[in-house]
Image 1: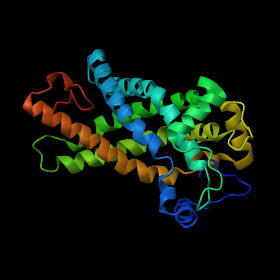
Image 2 (image 1 turned 180 degrees about the vertical axis):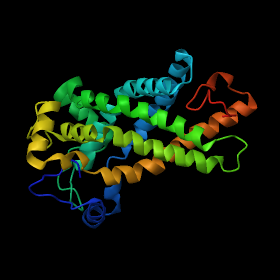
Image 3 (image 1 turned 180 degrees about the horizontal axis):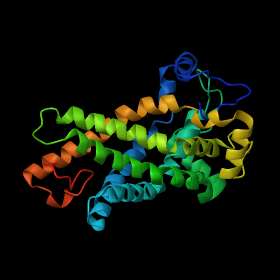
Image 4 (image 1 turned 120 degrees about the horizontal axis):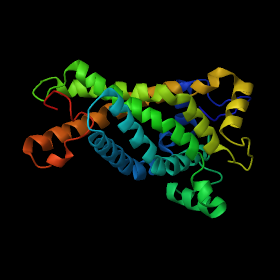
Length: 273
């Protein structure tokens, strides 16, 4: 949705895109590029929650500003993994668009994709879109952790509360939505820069050039391309992520197995979390 040609659009909207992929590429088309997230997300989440917890501890006080700063630090550092991972995912998803069976297959899998990009373009090619990823992820993760902290406080998430799991799921889901809304236009730019050059045609000279050309050709609505599908994904994914991490930390804390792991996303709250 973010990178389709405005003059010859393949999809009219989120549902039509979903429908078309299944019709044209089968249900497997919905999972194109899944190898890259499967390889990277484990390390990304470990890095994000580890850096956020340790940064919050280093800052000392659990304030909204410190929550934002700790989240931003985590978002900035994980770009090292996130950028190449999303580059491979984007390239894999664009490969054979609209084809039931691939006529030409440039990449066998996500790893093969990264290897070939490195062989052709070097380290710079692997890190294509790094600056836009950094601009997107740094404030996004700040809002991510800040929203979760505020939501869990507001809902009164106590360990002994029988409704603590639904509250954590709701808080995590809303955190994901807020974080994506905060920097979504930059995600569109990042996707376009990472997709640029596919098919041998390069359109953009950088972030500002991409912003200028995209706006000139499609207007301000271009910066909301694919937002609906992103938000539909963001709520369940982040609800599950935050709830899992928080419940795990609660469990470990109750057993006094890992006292050093206490400073996490909801560590210093005046509740039993």
